[in-house]
Length: 121
Image (cartoon, rainbow, N blue to C red; front, top):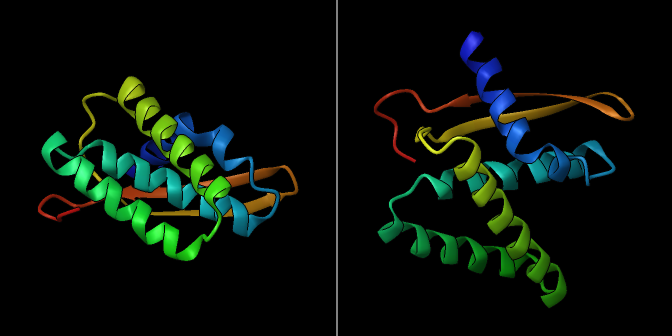
């Protein structure tokens, strides 16, 4: 599907370096998931963005009981949100799915899709 390829390229433009910090397919998928969350947070109206941002961080604190890791997560999330806004300021569709597949040790493929019209984030 042509749309999927375009979405996939956009998320890679925003987050390829972050995704590649993961050394396993599972870690890279986790980083892709975080990048998609950053994308989706960045498209929210500012009045809603801070609430959802803080809610996400609270959820992550329950999973990650390490202040240093949380500090880096917050920094990464902010950087990804900023990169999305800088690269694709007019793109306001949420990403509803993104999957990573390792092809080789240092190569991977991403498929992603936007919400269909009418779907909420």
